[in-house]
Image (cartoon, rainbow, N blue to C red; front, side, top):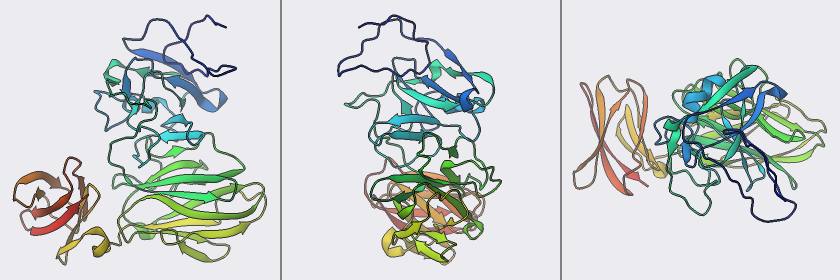
Length: 381
């Protein structure tokens, strides 16, 4: 039958039928800014949703004038400054924040018309805003709520724990602008995880006991970086740890340490299977040692342009590794000598930049500055 009532703009709802069929809604669509109150009650979780008849930008990288996280991050719990959206493919909640993961099920830059999601409030009472500046008209496809993102992913590894019946995972991402402590809108605590079979990380620095679904870390100082890995397993038994969704330079290492067994396993090369006691809970036994500096020339199409500077590519990303002085630029040329892109480099021993609009092929890289003149070649996929 029909139900009359007012659906608040910007508020999230759960709707269902006793049998398959259409759900029909009628009313006036939002065309101006919408503010919706969120509350810290019930641990701060609130259901909200895109009130506009267009997609909205979620974060930096969206083509909208404003985006949801830009406007609202300060109103969300700093350990959960993200959007939690239900993914029917995996029957779980996907986390969308500033980290771009290479996944197919969820568009990570846009939320489609009418799409609901979960956020966690920072204060007892507040309000989040959906602004007209967030609106963007995305091209519709057959699955408008779950479209693949065309954005370039970060360097990431998804750690998994599984047995014959269940699987849990957590994401670690690397970026030069991140820290070992809390990075709001990039580190994201868990929501909706199975408490009896749950994999997560804890912060490398200033850990306050939050279980993180995504942890963003710097892409340097790996010798000082030990990542606590937590695993909750109520019934106990055999479990296999593995690494999936890898987007790392060839030669990188993701090493799982089992301190109880004194075993170190590079999960990029092999899985690790172990039998755990019932009521296994928390961090303290398993740790991750990550090192993405190791580069194999054969696997990354690297040309050693000089002992101090190396140039290589991975997918659509070009890396300049080695100390470069201030006012140094990298210029990309095609094999016909046409200039394709110029990028100013930071005064650092590690630089990278994206070349998303470049077709596949071999390109020349010239690194030039006051005291630097190096060239190399890369293969852009």
